[in-house]
Each structure stands twice: as structure tokens, then as C-alpha cells.
Image (tube, rainbow, N blue to C red; front, side, top):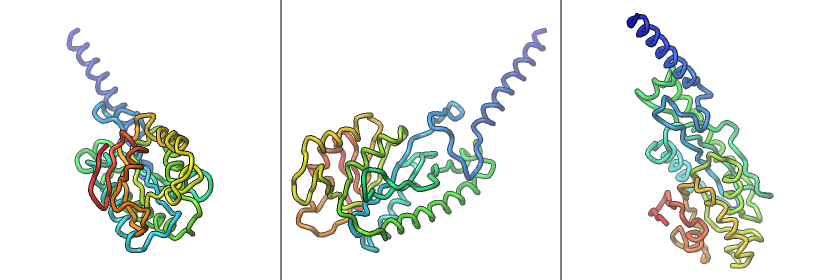
Amino acid sequence: MRKLLWAIGLVFVTGVTVTILDRAEVEPPDYCPTPGYWLHGLWKVPGHTAILVDTSNEIPREDGALAIARVDSLVRDTAVVPHLQLVSMHGLPQQGTRGVEQDDPRCVPLQGAMANWIYDTPRWVQIDFDRWMNRLEETFDELVDRPEADRSPIVEAVAALVASRDSLDSIVLVSDMLQNTPLWSHYTGLGDAQGVMAACRRIGAAGRVRAVYVYYIDRGLDIQPPNWPSPWWQRCLQGIRLEVLNGDAASP
């Protein structure tokens, strides 16, 4: 009788294990598990990294090439952008506060032995991700080629992204970081100081955004600080880790 009970228990445990593994397995090209799903009880699926390209001013070709190369390196560095982190690209909105989202956001794939847990063909997944990164570069080039805009709503765009994506936990900005809207303008030093700081607080209010990475476009303007983050941005993004991708890192 005891042997029979052991056998029934073994069959039950095996069935549950197979069911869990089958649910966790995902097939390319849709290989992003549902956010919040515990994968095999070992990893919780991470959040979302949004790449925001400031198209309000011209980005020189050389800077653009260096920026996308640095972004590519960052996305592939799973010590910074974890395995399975969702990645998407957006253009700074030229009107209003809505961003332009990449059509097919992807997750940074697991690799090696870990990949075999959920991917039938982990090498194929990596190749597919490489192809997507190439398309991401094409999207970046299209955004850089967009006409310059009268406004540069950096704060509003970031706040809108945070509000619209519950999984968003890090942001990459390719920008000169010169805010320029009626809410606040670095060009004039005028605007609604309380209003812009209220928008800044919305970025960090939920406590989800852990880091903001900036590829700093130096336009050689007198009003542009030689280094970032400036005191203004440190106040705006208080409590969030700030890092310059083409310079020194700074933490709040």
C-alpha cells in the first residue's frame, strides 16, 4: 500500500512539474513571459526598459552612431538590463505627450544553460534578438532623421511613459537634456517651477524607476552644463540612480 501511495505521489509531482515547465516555455518570436509571472519559482520576470530619443534638436551622425552602439551594449549587458527585461524604443513626441513606441518590443533573452529551461532553440532566440536589435537601430536612425521640433517635452514624455507602463523600471535617454516647454524652459529659465517639479515627482512617485541612463548630446551651448546630471535634473529625478552612458556616473 505504501509503495502504491509513493507511486501515485510521484506521478502527481511529475505531472505538476511538467505542467509548470510547459506553461513557462515560450516560443520565438513571442518569447516574453507575462510580467509578474514566477518562472520555475527561481526568477521573477523583470520589468521594462524604455529608450527615449530626443528628436527636438539635431543629433549629429557621429553622435547618433556612438549613441546606438552604447545603447546596444547596455541592453546586452544583463548585469544592467536583466534577462527577460522588456525593451522598447520611443521618439520624443513632437506634439502633446505621447511617445512613439517600437512596434515589437522584445525581451533580453536568457542564454546558455538557463535558456534551455524555456526555449526549444535558444540559439535561434539569440539570433532573432540580434535581428530585432538591428531593426531597433533602423528605428533610431528614422527618429534621428525626423525634423526638429519647437518644443522639447522631456519631463512630460518620461512622466507619460511611467504612467502608461506599470512594468517600466528604467529609462535610457539620448538627449541634450534641455527641457523646453511652457511648463519649463532651460533656454529662458522661465516656466511653472512648481508645476514642472510636480511632473518630476510623478516620475519617481511609484518607486518603480530605479535608473535613468543618458547618452548626453553636447551641443556646445552656453546654457548647457558641461556635465550631466545638472543640479536641476538632480532635483527633478531625486531618488533615482542617474548614469551618463558617455561619461561619469552619478547617484542621488
